[in-house]
Length: 191
View 1 (cartoon, rainbow, N blue to C red):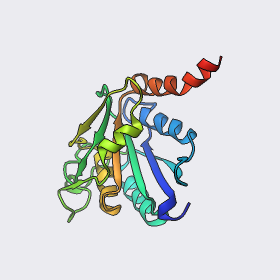
View 2 (cartoon, one colour):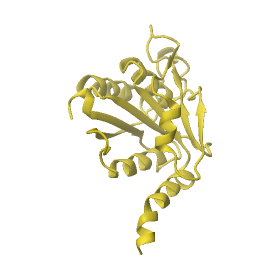
View 3 (cartoon, one colour):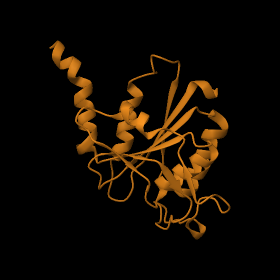
């Protein structure tokens, strides 16, 4: 799984603030159980990222330098979301909120000389077909907020030349249960 043509990375963030269970991490764990894509030999790698600006900088760099993935899909919890949100871009500046260790990036930016905005090269329309669950709504956004998730997506878009997507998921009770129910339908029919 060390070549660009055979690796897709899915990341999710660990606990933060009052969210002891981060639904985005639970969603990625479920995704990893589905196995490789049957149409192509693509290995799925799964990684939990801490809600920590400095650690994210190191890990995102290692992902792109060491694994050279074909695609990275970052997943984040959006406590106010009622649907899955597919982000279309990330911003360099504005990361003012402190991470879980109380750190804030200097001047609130990911890369001091980086472009203000980087658009994803991943088609959010195509991605929505892959992540849509029957009855689950998918919406598109051009504003990922100004926290570690937007910072992470920006760094990954920069290092991966746009081969990055950011998916924001609602709390566990809103989204993951729908996914699990949908996955269990064949089992229930068989019984």
